[in-house]
Image (cartoon, rainbow, N blue to C red; front, side):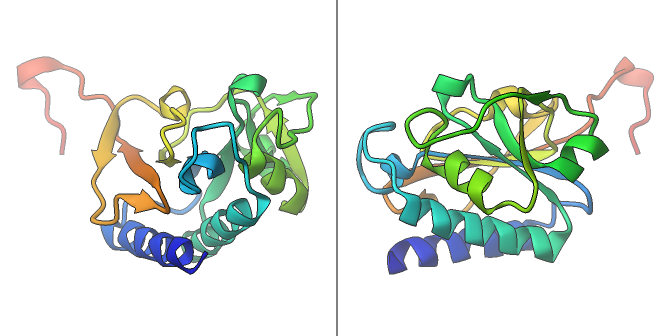
Length: 178
């Protein structure tokens, strides 16, 4: 568990150094705690691992004033757990489900238990995100996604991929972008 905490600390430090998270940005977290533990996705969920990741992401939220969205597993169609205030701010639509470890995943289930006023929404378009264990967060990112490369490429045994987004460049060769 200390290795996982070290990995998460390194990643959150790199996120802060990259400085791509702006105040009120929507940040999606996809996570397989099974993959972090070195097992196949969906086979060995861990609330203990989820708690460490939730704590690290909550610390990041407090440091950057962002909004967090924890992606559920495929059994809930990758719906997302957010705070009710986030749902209202971004005009998201609530769905009626409570994530549990076997339908939603350990990460989303723990987030639902730990958030102040959690709700589940079906989809959103986030400004950035992190994918721990190849859970496929791309469906919840705005266009255009830009990879963010970290030196710390793993949390436990799970590969980490991250992305930020940027506005689409439109207008062709005569357009001015800056």
